[in-house]
Length: 450
Image (cartoon, rainbow, N blue to C red; front, side):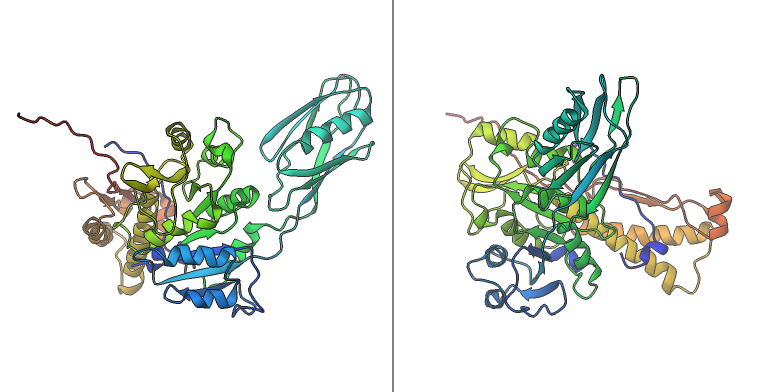
């Protein structure tokens, strides 16, 4: 956002119901590769490319590298978007955290805490030093941790795997006649993809993209990127890919399971056995080539992508984890299921973000271009009329379901709190709308006379 939130403040609640901004059409590749020389990036973080000029990407990056493959996947689709961006990453730095106890651990103590969401609980061993070593071993067993080393006295130094964002929760000591207190402190801040995304967002001249597609399949980078994009003030989306075989097996520690548990609405995930085919970038090329309301993410055919060899049982597991795939279904391969990690259709999120941007702009223009918007029931009706026009357009282009009573209600300001009235705020407005869902399946009964 660029200051509009001072005038227009909105909150999005996505509700499961029964039965103007061209940024919504621009993808951005975020790459681990370093461009040749500066690749035209200069001191910047992102660069725009035309989808008619893949050679320009080849000039800036290796033609055999992941950046070129990702760009090719976008460009190769039947009707790709006009442009895409490439965002270059800096060098990641592994985070280091020290866990320090203010006294020795004693008999009958139990030490418990969390590291990156995983619970750790270790009972007292034969000595303070032995217990610290056992705690360090439990921490080091986590996939996010490279090493965890005890000094034998009071400190455990935890070095995280590169790409992961460290998150050491509160460690407590219970039991025994006394309990030491523990404190975690970051000694080496991690530099991750979150920093790269923040840098790209801050670069206003190139912050014109909507859908972010990382070339990497690194699990730590994926989790970090998803966490960052979910918190952005800008309405953006993230599409990831992974080759982790645990995704299509029972379990809860794989990337898909972790993302589903986090219930992010802005992130979608694809499993594919061949990361070089950049299945997520291919879908980005398909989706971003059409306007909001014009295309669904499910059942798309992707140029240059082969079907992943998945069984029906494996597909069922993927679907249960809200993970997308590209697999053979009858007459040929297609994208399944076309959802975000929270289970909501990818096109529903994209369309909704577009609609909210358009609505925000329309309301903003109403307040800033009219000589005066009366702060009374008349002014409320004017704003409601502006929103009604925008809702009508969203119905016309296929974003909203025209059979649903889509409404935007602006209360009479005299019914609002004294604070809102003093501020001249048209508060407690409510948009009640339903996205026009896309079809995925046909069932029919054949009655044939013979």
